[in-house]
Every structure is written in structure tokens, then in C-alpha cells.
Image (cartoon, rainbow, N blue to C red; front, side, top):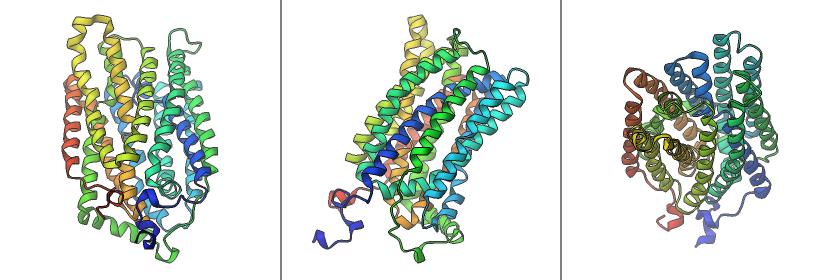
Length: 440
């Protein structure tokens, strides 16, 4: 009988809500929305590539930098997972990580404001270091954050939480796109690189407001007894066995790697528009707005797909969406011969799709891991998934080399190939929602 089953074995829709559910939902919701808004001011595919190219004059450096940002967030997580797995409370680690990491945008902004015009090389190094440290310390918060969130929010309610927060962040992010357009435009009161410093300062303030809200989350008690929790050494020792012995998880890692490698082109769409197709730097503001609208739509997509059909369906939807920006980019130059300056609108659609993909591309993999693994193994699975995903840091550097050695079209074609590979591999993934379908 259903009432004789342990709570953890009941279908998701029949499990009782965790303690402080509404309180935690509220603060997680608003913090996630603020994170989206702040990120749109220093967007990794529109704002940061322009800044790094202006400071370095090299597309290869743009690609390497994008890879460093990705690797700084992903690579440490397997060790962080081991370190936090045995902790009875994880919110202190989350608080320390977010408060420290988000301060580095102030540091980068100060270098841009006071040093940038006189010593661009030093400023480039400082900006790269600041953003890398932001991602590395955010990774310290990310692994325990996923564990806390999984205890606060049931699986069948996570989609609406992060979907609706993406919607709110997206609506506000449309305004931040206008701010980016104004700050970087020809009528801006700030010249380069002070204009980028203003964006860094704004992002830092919004990030830290989010840090305050996140600090108010009340962590539920652990379901796993403390004497059964693993040590750092035990967690690290079991990880190779997880990868070799768990076929479903191994397939998930391969799908994420293939899908993540569409990032080979992500930093070069805006450079193709401004350098190859002759659109002005201020166009990046319009592109940022379009990408935010896409992220807004991604929030609606996440809320529906995750809660109703689960993360496996979402993984496959992301596989389709991953292919669309590169497909349009391959058509832009031929089509521009027919439509002329109206090619700008194709770019707007491209960045909308890029936002639609990027806005929720990570959530299906994270939620899949959280539903797939038991509570005592969640940090190990999330940390291992993200650390192995660190190989995706090679994608932007590869993209920079392909652009330099071949062409923009070559890197867009490569991205399309990786998207197709990820979609094909996803066919072998098992479902995590059998408990709700009666198959169990």
C-alpha cells in the first residue's frame, strides 16, 4: 500500500513538502532572478568577448579566456564534492562562496576604471583573474548549493522555481540589455574601458544583493544519518567506480560533453557580427536584450518541461536548441547578399535562440543527477558531472583557433556537429521519473 512506503520511495507528487518550503522557495526564486540580471550585464557571449578582444586584439585570447571561465567553475567541483559530502550543514559553505566570489567584479571594475586606458595588458590580466576567481569561488558554493536546493525543493517543483525566476530575470534583463547598449554606445558618457567598468560595478552590486537573499535560506536537516556520511577520501575513492559502473550516469556525462562543446562558437557570434558583418559595437546591447528574452522564454520552457516530463525530456529539447544558433550563423553571410542591412534582425533571432539554449541548458543535467542519485551520493554525482564537464573549457580555445586558421563558418559548422552528436547520444539515457509513472 502507498501509505506503507517510505517517504523517499513515494512518487514525487505524493511526497510531503519540506519544512520551510515557501520561505526557501521565495529566497531561492529572487536570488536566482537577480543572478540572471547581474549576469546579463557581464554576459559571457556578448559583453566579455568584446572587452577581451578590445584589450588583447586576438580572437584566440577570446577563446582561451572563455575556456578559462568555464574550467574555473567546473574543474574544482569533484574535490569540493568530497570536501562537503561529510558536512552536516552546507549553507555556511554556500554563504562563504557567494559573498567572496561576487566581490571580484568590484576588483575587475576598479582595474578597468583606473588602469585600463594606460596599461591594457595589465588590465586584461586583472580582468581575467577577477572573472576566473569569481567562477572558481562560485564553484565552491555551487556543489553544496545543489544539495541544499534539492532538500528544499521537491523534484516536481524545481522547474517552476527556476523557470519563473528566469522569466523574472529575463523581464528585468531586457532593461539591462538597454543599459548595456547605452553604456557601450556612441552616446555614452563613459569611454573605453570605463564603460565596461560601469557594467562590472553594476553586476557586483546586484550579485551581492542576491548573496544576502541566499544567506536567508533555511537548510533542512539531512535525511542520511551523520555516521553514514562519507569522508573526503571515501568520496574521491568511489568516484571512478561511479563512472565505470553506472552506465546511465556515464551516458549523461557524454551527452553533456557533446552538448557543451557547442560552446566552440558561442564567443564568436558577436565578433562575427561586429567584425565580419560590420555592425557597430553598440549592437551588442541589442543582442544582449535578445539573449535575455531568449532566457525568459527558456524559463517558461524549463517550468513546463522539467515539472511535467522530467529532465530527460529537457535534455533532448536542449539538444535540438543547441543546433539552431549555429545553423542560422551559417546562413547569415549568403542571406545578407539578399537582405542587406536587415541581416541585423537575423542576428537578433540568433541571440534569442542562444539565450533560449543557454538560459536552461545546465538545469536538465543538474536535475537529472539530483533525481538519479541518492542523497548521500548527490554531491559526488554533481561534482563528478561538473568536473568532467570541465573538458568543455577546451571548446572556446578550439573555436578561436578554428576562426584564425579557417573561418567563422568552420567554427559554426563544428558547433552544429557537436549539437547533433549530443542529441544522438541522449537516446540511450534512462528516465528518472519512473516513480511517477508506476513503472517502479
